[in-house]
Length: 338
Image (tube, rainbow, N blue to C red; front, side, top):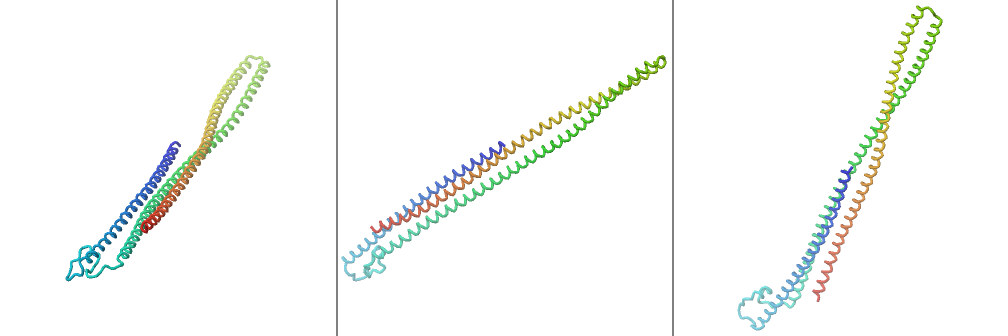
């Protein structure tokens, strides 16, 4: 039983370690999401600075090209355009369109919306992958824990049933032996009583015979008859004495057999009592194991609730990340307008 207790304690420690590992994994997910959001914010700010830099550089190139054309006048021949002017104007003979700034602003808006869409899709994809990964790990661990708990429950149930069946079989066998010994004791008691009756009858018969011999001795005065009767009486007395000795030995043997049977019955009664005590102890131990299994099931249920709470916390973190992304979008829109 101590081995079973150690196994249960080890299993509880393992479940606690798995719960701690899952907590650390959730913290790692939160830290990774925070780092991902920070990196996304930095990339977003860098892209915004680059877009603003490109926009300002394009405006400066347009202004420089306009000043150059105004100072040089109308060219009389082919003029090689500068790299900046040729970049902004495909044809050197055309004037700068007045809505160039609006086109740049439209390009910036398009790039901004594309960047926001890319960042949002990347964050959603990363969050979905992490959530799916840890959901699969959580389901696998719960399945393994349920399988181990079912194996332990079946093993303990089979062990208790086997022990109880063996104990009751032993008790039944000992009860049958006790009943057989009691039957033998009763029959021996009857035989002993019959031997006592026979012994008493023989004693009475001997006394009667001795009395008859005495009376006959008094009646007969002749020496021949006296010696003959004395010889017959001695022979009869010897025969009766031998029979009494034999009956006495039989009675002694019967006493010994009865004493041995009584000792065996006493030992069997003690064994039956001990087995009944062991059976009661096994029933108590079975109830204790049932309570412990119930405790383990309650602990597993509590761990399942904790895992569900952690999953809800992860979903709340994802919702917070989405809200933070929307807030970043709003801040960017506000900064871009200002």
